[in-house]
Length: 580
Image 1 (cartoon, rainbow, N blue to C red):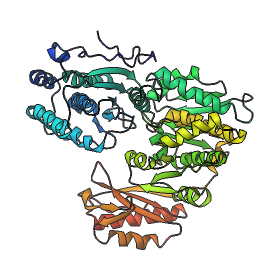
Image 2: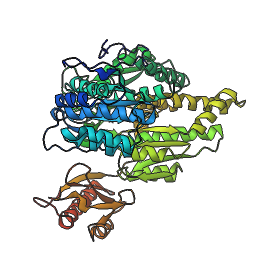
Image 3: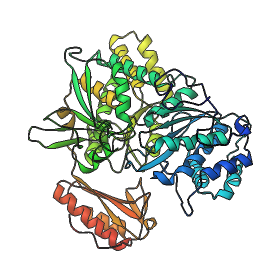
């Protein structure tokens, strides 16, 4: 019996536990190890030969997993299927595998593993992933044995894996390679077919909490979120009187497909209009959250009228940014910083009403606009913590608080509630005698249900934002006016070796090369409300530069001067940076 791609699971039928152990179609081999939970060296050799590693190719598992051109990934997918089985055996839980390259061009693809509670793969296993992906054919069995020993994997245990994929043309074939890897080590799997990345994270968490977090089906996901959203907007001023229109750029990706499925579950008060739905154009091409954020302009294929609320998802629907055009035709971007601020204002107000001493904080990276940090700390009086770039760093820090709000400026983020905070809020919502406190606790309880706490989720974040705007009676312009962003500029400088730059203080200060930080400090002093930092790229020999100041002219001048300092002190390549 073969698992149907895009079949029962993709349609939202309740079948998360029907885990199957077939090999994918198209291969003549049928292996006896299907029933065995241990490695069969001969089977491994035969199947590995069907997914050969290109000679000389070396890849590294980073925050985004593996990402490169799709045609170079077949062997990686097969081996990550194997790794997911080993991880599942090691932690005695279901592990997720998502085939996606997020906001990258359509020609690329990638893969990332999801840990038991829907979180990102544990850092120690990132090393195993890199080791396994880069092992030569003849070293594969030895590498698997080595990982089993280092990670204390009991090969006699059962393993189960949930698989999801995005809409890229290469994703279906690559997910079949994942299935071969799972099956060759005797693992069971359930293929959800086409899902957003956050949906797969959600399913894995539901499965491993035995349904406490929700049902591990798409139907369960849609029902949980839409029910919480409806409960929230019932309480909004003018509820039921007017429809709220929202234009959504789906980046020609999976978001369009899943929002179409979700539409029947949503209340009539929210009318969503989908653009860049993947029927005509290429994934992420001149559209999507990353394009809008980087280019500070609307996506192609979305017609904006003045003061209309619009938002963009990225290719796998784990990022969201909002924007609008004012009466003069000027484009206004509302990025992750402003999303975090809106959510923080709302939650702080509610926490004040329930009268509990719950500790709330916002987690940002050095890329957060200085105006947002100042507003949160000085006006809202909410503690702000800065961490290194990368979702795993933000998520980890946010777990330290009763309520941890984290967003990257690019629009990836969520809110985490500690177990104690969640228990207390649910208790107050049911038992509190004081009407105002009980109502505030009920709103918080619905927010907990609406937020996907496993990972940033564009669908969930969109509904959270729409609920808050409705409840507070805010227009998109009023939201934008909470604070004014400082002008900022991102640049990059080619260098011979990015490793010459080492940083500290959450990447805000350069430790090496000698003299660089002193030069940056001297340049920053020349301008008002200014700051600048440099950090090495994680993937290429490039140094990234961020600058902000009181005017765009001063910002551009500062960014250029810092880029020259990097060029001269950190081994710049090619022509020196030119003024902007």
